[in-house]
Image (cartoon, rainbow, N blue to C red; front, side, top):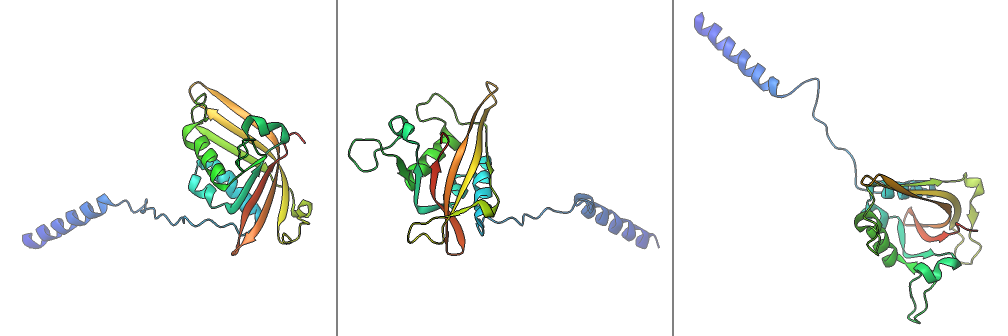
Length: 194
């Protein structure tokens, strides 16, 4: 009988030891998130743009832009931040996909290109996406499926040390197009002063 009691106590101790390591009230968390970006609608696309800035996620940002992407500047900005895209030694009013990726990567990871500002500790892009009935259709031939969405934006770059922030407000006109079941930004036009 003592052997049975001893065996029962050993089994009980073993069970308590095994379950003592695993809390039944705190089950294992299983990550079911996906790295797949869904841009099924223009709204979802622009919400993912906000997310890319918030997370400083260049990989996500890349997935939002069409391969023929153009960022179009205000005329007053050509001489200040324009890039010579056509080799004529004159800053142009736009830049393409590769330049946009590099500039955004700098903002997310390295700070300003002149070294005056470090990368922000937090970045927040807020877009006021208007209702669909306010969107436009691009009248240019070949662009019948494109949507044109004018959004007010607020971009905030926050720095912990010293405690400071930079805030930019303005308007951006997004030309978005469907491609292989997803929406992509093909033109991002700055209309902040218009």
